Length: 345
Ligand SMILES: [Zn+2]
Image 1 (tube, protein in one colour):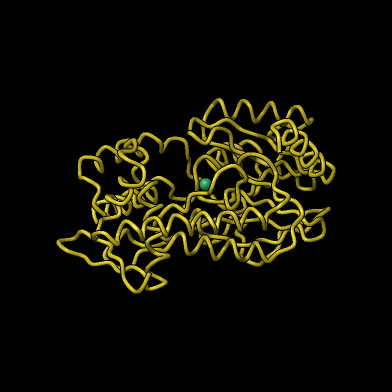
Image 2 (cartoon, protein in one colour):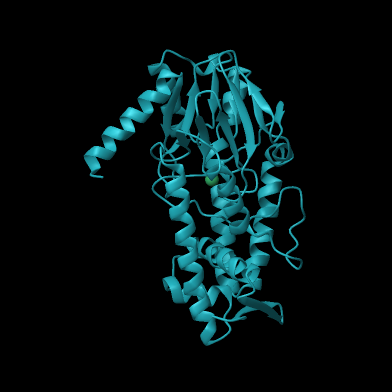
């Protein structure tokens, strides 16, 4: 498809969503991802799914985007938070305060959002433990701590007043949205399915132009202890994608970029990509046992410090795939884990 055809398809798909009262509001972020998509649902109550990061620029643009549709922030009656990443919920506290809107999020995410600052500190402690355990040099870990602390201001604690349950329903005047927990990209990813209109608000669960990184994150409500079995973010994510793949959905509205009309094709492509990457890693550890950090360096060279945790998560996710198949094994020595090939071919 040419860029022009893609642009036409994007306009057509957004038009289709707009006809049902759902409008994409692309809000700026200071992060590499660029803009994130909030979705305004013109229904009763007036609903906003995600909000963008906690910044004056995001707030200003969001306010203008709402005004262009004839709404004020004060008119919002319901805010829905799709997951725990600050670029998606950072403005929620300000919007809730100004509008008095209810705040809905998955119930297990509520304590995290209420104690955001403390919870992200625990996340950082967990990430540090994982990095040291998988061969990232201590000086890089220290540098990343400073980076992460600097990012924290883009989020803001918010109180959830309408907790959601997996499989439950969010009922507005003109529609019913099925709430589905689809963890993997983060532990709290929540998608909203409009069965009647065959549409899904998917946030970062599924994105057309990039593979959604299954970041290795501390499970909600746990201590940052990395000595036990680690969460298997990629396997969790692949399971979530299989569940979405099994559904008939004509239009997926993601948290970044353009709408998706071929979710099965896209998910199959993601599965093939993860398979290829796992095989590449298997090839490397056939030669010698390696830490996850060494594997990342062989695959991508010396990446920027800020990317170290991302690439580590990638490697560990695919190592988990091989471990689950019995084609790799891991051994710990002096607190550092190395992966080696196991089984046949
Ligand atoms: Zn995210």
